[in-house]
Amino acid sequence: MEEIKFSIIVPIYNTEKYLKQCLDSIVNQTYRNLEIILVHDKTEDASGEITDSYGEKDDRIIVVHREKGDVSSARNIGLDLATGDYMVFVDSDDWMELNYCEEMFHMIISFGDADIIKTDYFIEAEKTYLIKLFTDNVFDKNTIREKTLFLLNVFSRYYDESYYSELNNWEAILGNVWAGVYHRDTVAGLRFYGTKCEDLLFNGYAVMNSSSDKIRYWPKALYHYRQNLDSAVTRYNPSRIEEYSSFYEHCFRLKEEFHLDERFTSCLSRLMVNQLNVNIKYTIVHPDSPYSFWEKRKQLEQLMGLVYYKSLPYKTKRTRDFSAKTKCILILLHFKFYGTVICLAKLQWKMKACRKKREIQEDGEIDK
View 1: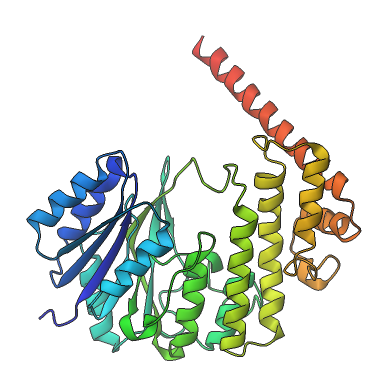
View 2: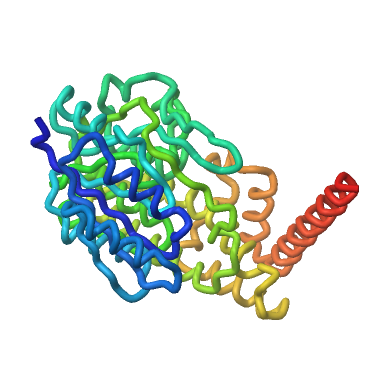
């Protein structure tokens, strides 16, 4: 009996090469009570034609074509259209095990209604890597202990290391919305925002909307995440600083809405430190940046003047597990040695270029 309906939401953009594998893994699910919502952003590849061909063959599929937008707005369209009991998010270059929804159905039936279920998953790169969220087979007897503390650990990576000593990877459990399902009541009215950490923010709201005893873990790997080696993180993106700022703004709204205390602010500061390095290296000092040294220095000064970065830790116990390099950068930024930070970041890029050149030369000698 398949009385539970799953709504599967798939944003599609420029994934012609992988799309059929993704859609085949969805339409061929052993559990059949599905609603499949495909939101296609118009591209010059064949993704649109492939999407339409699947929609014509399966009446469970709803196809939406639109002009190009971001993944957040595509998922929001899916949420607006969804009528299922549980939401499932799939990226169009990934794929699911054919028993994904069946396993989720049995989990829900076995343990009663769940607000959120998270599973293990595979990373597909040059090799396949299994990502296990917990070392144990249960999520603290199938539930979490205290959701606020749980959320703090996720946002800070390790707020209290003794809280879940059996948890392998804090980021993996709420850093994505795939590899899991969400009850429609838990995500009712929730939206995805922006293009940076949108999954983490959505999960933050979902956790706070949920009941502690209804967040569950299923110790099976049912999802295959295809790792993009040409990551957007490493490409030059002049909008990155603004995008991260939007994320922080929504995080503070989350804090106010659920009356989170200063522990959350402390955890968010740690997350900012990690993303600050990304802003410096891959935006301000990126080799593709057209700006001069002094213009880059001015950009860094303006970045550190943003309200989100003014209170970053540079000499507290919260930095104890940062790398020596990160601690050094924080101290230099605190004392406004912006030019020095720019020079160090440029040196990193030069060293990376030298390593790549050396690897190419070594590969050439091996071929000979």
